[in-house]
Length: 210
Image 1 (cartoon, rainbow, N blue to C red):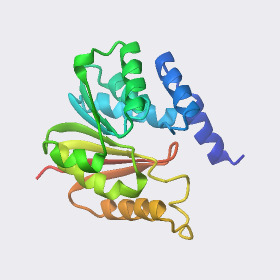
Image 2 (image 1 turned 90 degrees about the vertical axis):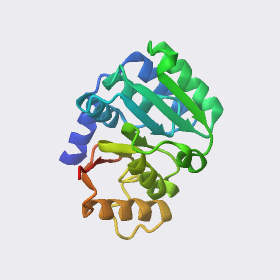
Image 3 (image 1 turned 120 degrees about the vertical axis):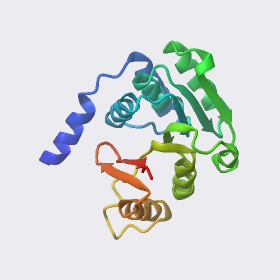
């Protein structure tokens, strides 16, 4: 194992996940739903805490791993989370309850994000997390930036897409879309962006002030 790979592994292993997150992660893997890695979870929790997020929207509920991390960082926030799979959302709801999150602070919306997002109010969220349908990531980021308040942050896990984005020979649609997204936001004056290589990558974009 290379030194860099050892560092990445250490960054994952050093995260002490709460039991409710461990349970949600194990359940996700059992059902074939890929959750964010522990290192990415820890990062989004820190970002949620540092931004003092009060209103969060998540595109891709999964079984609740990312939502649990967001609420761990911002325990007083309200989380709106969208997913096409109602059964997965029910498991996530159970995980939020197990974590002690009041039901009034979690709004689960079933449906396809491409149909739900156009109905959501713009400039209404402090934090947006996008982890669904990689083939639609560019469209979802456009919606995410519309939904974020000025100074709000949009987060995109899996931004290095299975370590394929850095290899120009990889040209499948999802890899190409992530590569295009990263290139465009790096030169955009509308956001301040950074890419973390932890886990499968985390793209961070803060909506610039005028």
